[in-house]
Length: 111
Length: 117
Image (cartoon, rainbow over all chains, first blue to last red; front, side, top):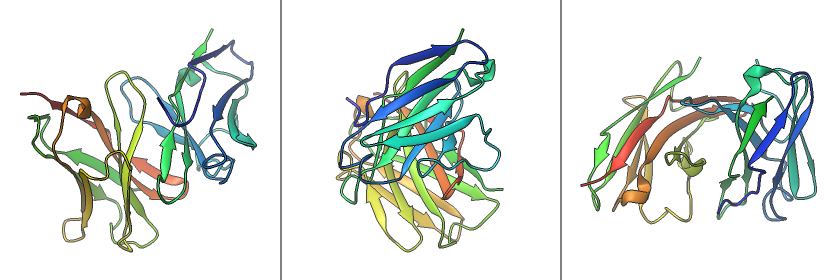
């Protein structure tokens, strides 16, 4: 069982917006602004899409945005495109004893 | 741009030690602002953080693997490595090396390691 909880799947039509949630606890997501989000296409290495909760690495589309409320972080993909179909993982810092924990992953399907 | 490449045996016997190396190009592993780490993914499953090392010498490991994991840096070869001892079938996974600083993060392509006799 993963430390962070994500929905198994989310789907949307091209052009729509979708949001993926990542629920942790007050010991990880709720305590630190250190949630990152990864996109992984089949057979490929994950790619960092959001770090420190809301920041986008250089080159990542501004259609991807991150937010947090309490113990839940969220990734929103706006203007959904076929190329966004992939698995998405959240990851949070969890303190010096545990350090980094991942969510179980969410499969995004573009209808 | 930073590039990372994993190398090592693709098959390891149960109870033996898994050893992987990540060769870094494009910059030095000794730059103090960088972090280096390993993440694995069992076939068909999610990601699991294994551990990270900073050039300052600080190491951080997943508590569930801590007793079996060592991550180290070899500045002379511009590499960092992973050793996982006493492996079992559940350690079968694609192993990724990761490095960077802040949002400038780079991953290797991953290498499948199978634990089997």
